[in-house]
Image 1 (cartoon, rainbow, N blue to C red):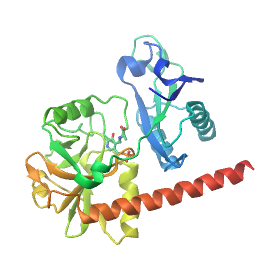
Image 2 (image 1 turned 30 degrees about the vertical axis):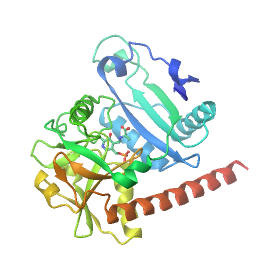
Image 3 (image 1 turned 45 degrees about the horizontal axis):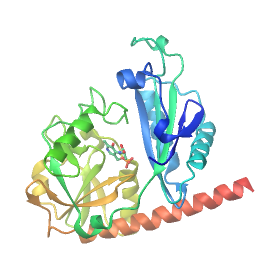
Length: 300
Ligand code: PDD
């Protein structure tokens, strides 16, 4: 696998990078992470991702002993070492650290930090032409009083089990309900329905990860005159949706044309979805180009 990894201060090739088995990220799944991507070589929405990493860490009482400037220099150095042409996927993980087998935080004096940089291929043209099928799976999204989905946790068992069920059903993403039977989110993305020209997405209080792309979509909607709102949604709302799409850093905006046996709209990617996707790209490229110019000016 092409790419580079930073592991507690050392940068090397991705496929041989390793972490000690006594790391509590491995032992207990105790840690949090972020996934970012670049456009034209510049990380997109970097600051909101780092702010969410810090919120996730605070939610598990993990003190991060590095400032934003240090983290950025590690991300940049790892990206340089990866030496990849084209856009990259950047995963930043931090865990409780290495120590004896105990839930006592005194066992692990220092958090571990890992940064993975690998290629981010452009979206498959099939997405725009055909859209994807997803499955509404019986696995419930974690109860917010348990492992709160607001925490972008390295403990991804809930998500992995849901996605594996979707794969068994021949679908590419798993949509989950919360414990109240309302739609919450997908295993790796947020969901939006289009009804009457408006984009609706489950409320943050439904128990979900507040996606950075989801938040960005509220701005993109304004660019193209599409109202974007939070709503309490149930599986019955899928039957009356004109269009459906999912959002995430790596999947951007992906049109959904089928949910199990339900065909959405005409069975083709919808017009509003494609308009939002174009606007998303326009804004993303403008923002990363401005950020790149500002950084170059700062360096000169
Ligand atoms: N997944 N919900 C869940 C459970 C997620 O794991 C993700 C992101 C999202 C969308 O968040 P964002 O727009 O900030 O990427 C929603 C990343 C991409 C991943 O785990 O690979």
